[in-house]
Structures are given as C-alpha cells and as structure tokens.
Amino acid sequence: MRTVRADPPVETGELDGLAWARFGAGGSDSRAPTAGVVVLHGADSRKESHFDFARACAGGGLAALAFDARGHGESPGPLDGRAIDDVARMADLLRERAGVDAVGLRGSSMGGYLALVAAAEARAAAVVAICPASAVGLSAGVRGSRFGFAVDRDAIVSLLRAHDETEAVRALDVPLLLLHAEGDEVVPVELSRALHAAAPTSKLITPPGGHHRSIQHDAELQGASVRFLSRAMRT
Image (cartoon, rainbow, N blue to C red; front, side):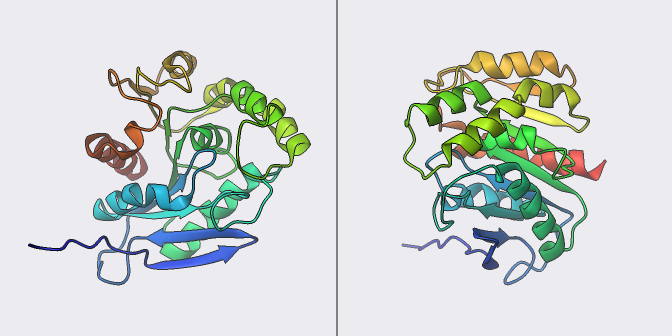
C-alpha cells in the first residue's frame, strides 16, 4: 500500500496577531509562482480547512497564503473592525514573501463576503467568492450570538453596515467568479444570483444540490477556480 502525504506549507508565521501559512515556490516545489492567492475562510472555520485549495493553487503555479481571521484558529480574538485591513495586509505579505505582483482573493461564506468588500483595498487582480455571505446575514448572526468565535460586536456590526457586498461588486473592476451550491442551506443561492446581476461581466456557477460547504472541497470546482485565477491574473 502506498502512503500519500500532503505537502506542508513552505513557511508559516504570524503578523500583527494573524497566523498564516504559505504554499508555493520553495521546498520540493522548484517552480516560481506566476501570481498569488489569499485564501479566506468562513465564520467559525480556520486556515487549515482550506489547505487543500492552497495546495491546488501551488500545483497550478500560483503561490497561496491562508490565514486565520482574528478570533479563529491560532489568531487571538476578537474579530474586529480591522477585518478588511487584515485582508489587505495578508495580500501585501504574500507579494513580499512569494515575490509576486498580482494577487487574487478566494473566500468562502464570510470569507467570500470579505473577498468582495476588501478587493479594492487589497489591490486584488481577481476574486473568487464561494457561497458569499451578506452583510445583513453576518450582522444578524453577530447580534444574535450565533457564532462561536470571539467578536467585537459593535466594531463588526459597524464595519458590516459600512460595506455592502452588492455595492462592492458594482464597483469591482477585476474578474469575478461566483460559485454557489443550489442546495445551500445557510446562504441562499439567490444572493449570488443577485450579485451576478449587479456585475454582468462576472461568471456564475451554481451546481445543483450540494450544501454550504460542498463547493469548497470539490476537486473539479477547485480546479475551475485555479484556472480562472490563473487566466485572470495573466491578463
């Protein structure tokens, strides 16, 4: 029987309280990355949940950096009003550590929302949002104490009130891929359809069935995301 071991990150670290892990050039991978991707997890998740996608990026010639949002994983809490700045900070860190100029964002659920609203500040060259949450839905969850992570309630509610995902999509001037399972029981697929309508040049994929987390780890759709990001950032 052959044992298959997943490649570990080429480096890990901490910046301003944010724990991160980078995949890509270095170690056993001798190819220089052509661009990079910052991977954003959802509420009550952590960076390790998306190492499979980070490895897929590395296999496709892209550097990738996954990090724990404040209050999650190894990043002490609470999640606060720095959430958008944190995405931009991680994008700059990936540029520095991987030696790339073009950096895209790929986020799921809460991470999908942050990928949309932080794209401008992070100077993102492309965005992939998977089952993105809405500011209204996240705010209701925070105010209703539905999440398990530590959160500065007032600061996050204020941030959510100031950053609407539909307005962010309308202002987005880089390629956007939206993926949303029709069977999502947490965030209705209609949200991504409305975002696609607000940004007609975006690409929307809505696989039948599935659930809120199914697309994140679907190998075929991960491949579609990597190809989309690679093509977008080449141009």
